Image (tube, rainbow, N blue to C red; front, top):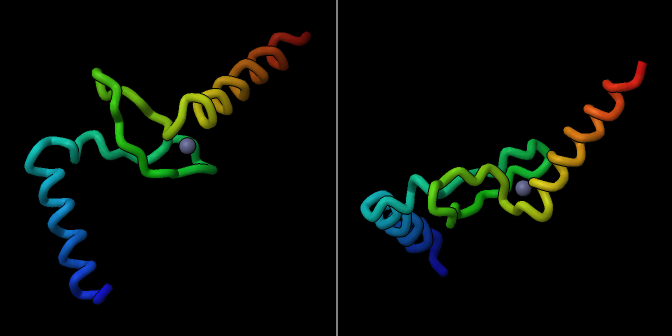
Length: 73
Ligand SMILES: [Zn+2]
């Protein structure tokens, strides 16, 4: 595809997303080692990771590991 046409198409897609409110649901993953862009399908728009199974669990595992190690005397 022509590069100029591709750029034009990208602008059209973004304009569409802004117009219908989906723009607010386009997010990047909070996991620093991931940073994937994802679309927030959740009703309350509170998703912070691209995947709860991958990045969500990674963060939760890290947090519980910290709690376990901190509890030691
Ligand atoms: Zn992620």
